[in-house]
Amino acid sequence: MSPATTTNGATNGTNGTNGVNGHAQRLRFEDYYNVINNELTTTSKTRHNINPATTEPNAEVPVSTQEDVDRAVAAARAAFKPWSQIPVEQRGQKLRDYADAIDSYTDEFAKLLTAEQGKPVAQSIQEIGMATTWLRAFSTMKLPEDIIEDNEDRQVIVRYTPLGVACGIVPWNYPILLMIGKVAPALCTGNTIIIKPSPYTPYCDLKLAELGMQIFPPGVLQALSGEEDLGPMFTTHPDIDKIAFTGSSATGKKVMAASASTLKRVTLELGGNDPAILCDDVDIEAIIPKLAIVSFLCTSQICMMIKRLYVHSKIYPKFVEAFCNHVKANFKVGPGTDPANFIGPVQNSMQYEKVKDMYSQIAKQGWKPALGGDMPDESTSKGYFFNPTVIDNPPEDSRIVTEEPFGPILPILRWDDDDDVIARANDTKMGLGASVWSSNLERATRMAKQLEAGSVWVNSHFEVAPGIPFGGHKWSGIGTEWGVDGLKAYCNSQSLWLKKKL
Image (cartoon, rainbow, N blue to C red):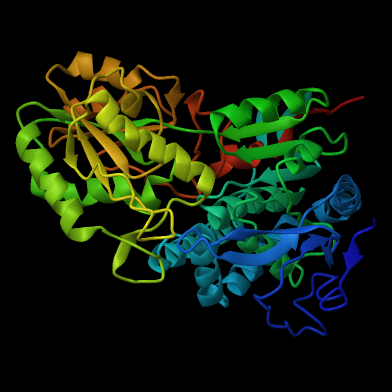
């Protein structure tokens, strides 16, 4: 059955001219559609996700088919050449216009993000702010044209040309920022892009694409929602040139394998198991608030949260007590709609069962909780909630150390020797982020340079910026996003040889 195109808004912004007759229509946040060629479309079959704080259903969204994918790819292909020929300064202005448009809906997007993802509203507002910051930063970034050789005979220039049609596959933990983090570099370099949201969090991404109809020409920015079979329709499609995927390492391998048959370019931002190493000279009271946030933000459902906290034996007992007291006093658990809460629900039932299984290991494996450790009481709450938990010095080979829980449970481990703790920190297939904390910058820098991760911080963790490349080592990813390196990931490198004489 062909997809049904709605009449409400179907021509809104079809020329990328800020709405009808230059006036933007306000978005409605009650209905959700695919965006194909600047038309709002639905499908004969629909589905809904649930609010993880209440398990109540959210709105219906389309379940896209191969026909929908083919239409979107054809529209993106047709839009590519004219979009790529628009001067980069004009494309940058479109990104700034898009950022302004998103800003005008901050309250609506924050409410929607909390309803579908579960994070507290304050964290939702922060994510939206980061997304518009990314758009404005990319709007002024330029790809270099490097003169490699210039003499009487010839000039050789290395330049970068857009790939064509990209597909961004977005996860459920940061659906707004990680969508925009793919849209911005793709569009500013002259590509077109189709967004595939996570089946667990389709709502904000669909609405962002709908808002994009008021800014971008048809086919430049599109979005399709669907079920688990939608991703392979994109990764195997012969007319898609680039896949930018954020998600688990296991799924990333499948994306890479599926993309191989058509030699697609791929960027994979995958899981992590970030270590943080605390030296014996840190100011415990000063760093605990920072460490607690970068351990439990977004219910610890961020790939770059601290997942293993190594604390020097000289300060271990004092630190563990102070850290647990701080978390217990400051990090309330509950629905994200309550501004008093810092830890919301785990986002979906699949992840809830995985985290619940990890909590069940506490008693089975004899781990010692320094804080929390209780299984959720499902008789008192419908939502997917866990109390924050700290495990006191579990064995190095235990699951809580070797696996990424993606939930609010953190192991704290003792160490005594610099070389030994570096070896332990590196003893993982993952290599996304890592940090060292010390008042001795020389010592911390020496240790940090030995850590095997794409981002390494000294006296901080989980700092990101649109102008700085972000990517993983080992099983945490291939390639980088953001910064000029991230722009190049959406381009082909071209060596241009200019012979000065015939």
